[in-house]
Image (tube, rainbow, N blue to C red; front, side, top):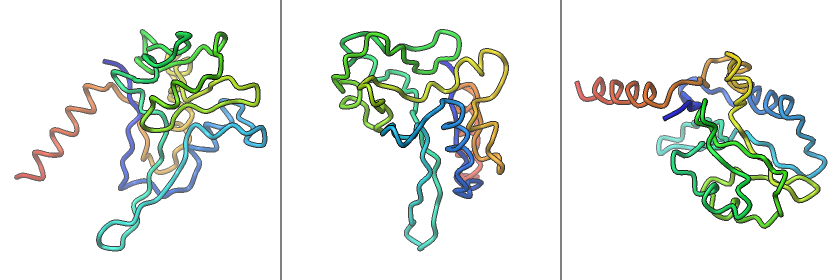
Length: 161
C-alpha cells in the first residue's frame, strides 16, 4: 500500500488550478505535443447536473503499464507507492500506453514516455503533490491508500444508516 491522490467531486469546481500546477511542476510544454498529466473534465448526471473530475494517473496497485513496458522504465516507488518513470531506456513503443486503461502515459517530442509520478519527490520531502497543494477548494487530497479505503467504508455506512 502507498499514497493515493483522492478527489472529492462534491468540492471540485473545474477551475483547472490543479492542471496548471501540474504543468508548472513538471515543466510541460503543451506546444511540444506532450499531453497534460492532469486534466479536468465534466460529466452530466441523470438529473442534468454536472459533476467535475480532475483526473491523472491512478497509480494502480497492480499497474498494467509496469508489466507492459519491455524496458522496465516504470516501477512502484518504494516509499510513496506511486507509479514512477525513468524513461532513460524508453524506446517509445507505446506498450505502456496501450496497457493503461486510463490513458496516463504521454510522449514527449523525442518519443520518450512521461507521466504523472504523484510528485513523489515532493511527497518524500513532506510536501503535497503540486495538484493537491494548489487546489483552492480542497477537492484533491493526498493520503495513505488504506486511510482512503477506511473513509470510503465509513461514508458508505453512513449512507446506509
